[in-house]
Length: 493
Image: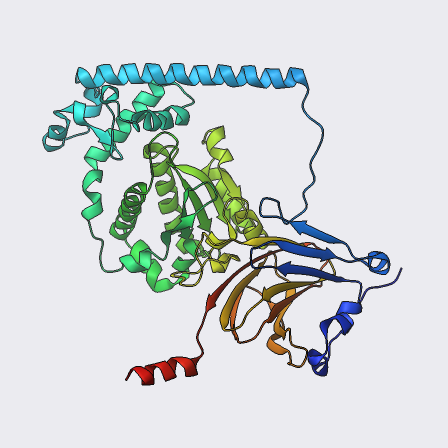
């Protein structure tokens, strides 16, 4: 078996034609051309195929740029029928439970007996005044009285039903406890409260950034920020500080709910991502941080049911697996299925299942940057595969001059080297090396002003034994030379 080695390119070979370079002559080169209308031209060459002929694959906008294998095996007719029967029975049971809950809630609100003596005993006289007119009571901005026919009422009631396994009495009791808790804790007025001058630091710990592929707002919990001793002491040193932090966390949840749409077919849940990187591992800190996290988890489970679509815990240390098992031991099966734990080397790969590359923050291996003025999350991102032990070349054609080309490259798993250069179409012009070959650990963004037709050549060398996914997005804009702008300015004067 002949061992494949990566050929080296000397500096004086940059002015030669690329087709004559040692890399082009090797049998481990993959070519990808990115045209102006985003039609991809991909040429995959092996040693045997290069000797015979060159094969071209053309991918249109409607096709995938990566090869996928489809299975021709379909479920049997009987199995398919059973699934349809089970689905119809389940839908029928859900509709029946929702109808019963709507009827019971309507009678309780119309007859002013939603809350019993046991519930009212938890409230003082001032708090009971808020229960004088139960017909106008609302939750998360949605009226609960079914006869008002608000389009979000059924969506809210279904969340309580689902949290209780579609048991009507349990769902109604959970709704009662939620309303009592909100009145007692004055949750409807919590948005106007302020908790010191350190709220900007808290927003570095918990924040919402971007959306997932289904449109769910993505909420990040970055617990590693509490590794800072001063920040940790500000919020967890005393019992009052811990109470304020819990209340601020509830306040953030209430403000975030305003981003949701409780109409039928709308997005009415979050994608929650908890980052455990650099989480305080000291026993004293965990003794204080652990109970606070557990209390916040219980609050959201009891009083904000089914508002979390998926909870992804990334950069998970080994000790957290045991803690997570203890924390969720009394959760329902549906709640446990919402959790997904990812070790540090699987973070980007896991997030890509739910979030597009443009919405994954830069620190998690994505293309997202805060306050990005160049790219938006709506810009098209092209996906490719680089085989193990191969060199991939991506070409961005530039058919005319006086333009600025901006591009960004992301590789899942990294462990690759990157290089980019400009190759003019004029044989008399020289190549311009933009970035020398280097190992990359995060997404690369570069731009270049071009005054003559040519192409940007991006070279990625995968020296590992694992296939790598590459994501590229590009943008071009017409740019006037500086001397022309200066001349026009003097002419106007």
